Amino acid sequence: MTLPALFIPHGGGPCFFMDPAGGPPDPMWRPMQAYLAGLIASLPERPRAILLVSGHWESQAVTVHVGDGQPLLFDYYGFPEHTYHLEWNAPGAPEVAMRAKALLDAAGFATAAESARGWDHGVFIPMKVAIPEADIPLAQLSLRADLDPAAHVAIGRALAPLRDEGVLIVGSGMSFHNLRARGPQVTPYADAWDEALVAAATDPDPARRKARILAWRTLPYAEFAHPREEHLLPLMVALGAGGEDAAVCDYRDHVFGWAVSGFRFG
Image (cartoon, rainbow, N blue to C red):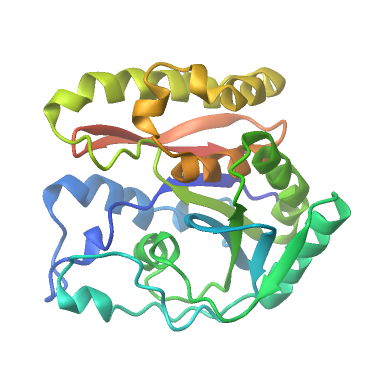
């Protein structure tokens, strides 16, 4: 069975785990938490592994992490002490990582492999919600540091065979990511951006969908929504992996006054 490719929001820092007693997060984050908690059950079958591209890892060549992701990389700042001791002890998936590398090599991409870097919070924060048992192996893939949209769509396209091999391809980012713009005054601009992004990413014609997303800077308030595009590029990878399959927006809510969406391809 073919698994979809997903673009998911990963929240802000350790937003779902701010209560040291393990209570629910701030009400603002609860719809996103519920969406992430239901991801695996929403799939046509349970994946044997996950390949995840996070907006928090860039490298010159596309790089796969072939280790077990431990220790976790707590790459957020100014949060309560207990959030720097969170655990998510899923096994790594080195064979999936190397299969991804082989697919990318065959597509002509410069690639690398490493085993020392831990999983960043774009991995373990949403996955700790989605898979609290930490019982699905995971491999992480970097963005390419040039942040070229067409290259990242092509990366996703090269990885698409994994969807038929029991591997869930996940892009982890945020559809709106301007940390300096927060509050209700931002919402009209965020809504206009999100409406245009959703229309582009879910265009029923795959070729037109790709073209519209590659031209993301032409959408309303694009550079306001993404002063730097690293949190949007995981969407490009997921869209590329989705290929000709149907696309839907399967999550939309507001945090910090931002409209935030998630997408499913296939």
